Image (cartoon, rainbow, N blue to C red; front, side, top):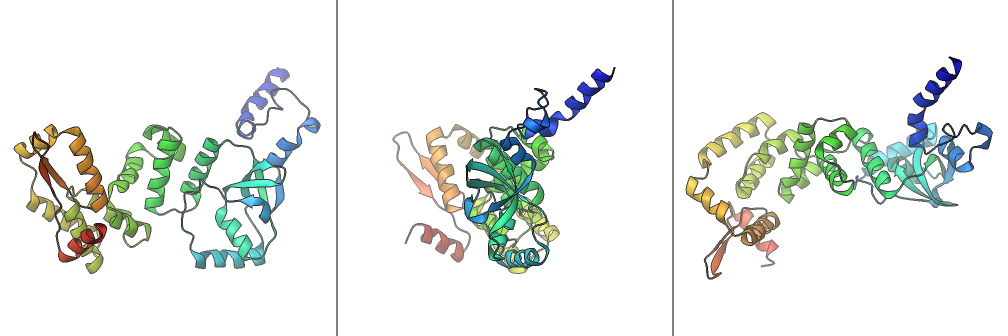
Length: 305
């Protein structure tokens, strides 16, 4: 009976030890003989800042300098409360997995070393850990979360359901974030810079016409519309525009796949719905619509004219 209870305790403890690649419970190896590498993973170590390189998979691309200096001031008085996490590359070289804000703030504070958890991870595990760590704890803006989700799907070979399980979100929430990446660059930039909220962005996503999207977006910025007011404006615009008639839908459906692909790429590049018409002799035209003088000037700049 006592032997069975002991086995249960070992099994229940496997979650953390497996994550840290600690195999001593499986092999019944005494604690005294655990390798130095595993001991380093378990404990907090002081690591020289000059021996740490930043994480190339870091999803956050912008750090608020004022916030960093505030954190640096806190570190000067309180020290590092939460250790960073690194992986060991060689004897004296480490790479950040999570905690870049603490790392950067520590350098500003004039520290020479920082407390760190040291663990082993391959590149895919490292990317996934860094993304999940940031999504859950670093208060990324909506666009950064969307980009992180997309990277997890493409670079970690995850399906949306699997991604939802990893980050504790349902599929519809994950999909709402991923849809933000379909917005024109100007709108994505406004979302990134917190000029608009995710609620604003979700309202704009429902507009199929890129030109109309940008026009309403400009009105949103100029008039500082609330999400509710924007939704009303979008609803009115969509009702005024109406749906494509059956003949237009048929033409789009029957469009040459290569032409359709080029049309989509041009639409993404110019931030407006580009229309390409071509006949059986491969002759045709490209239409670039614009909704205002400012929109026309934007397109001319993209054409370097």
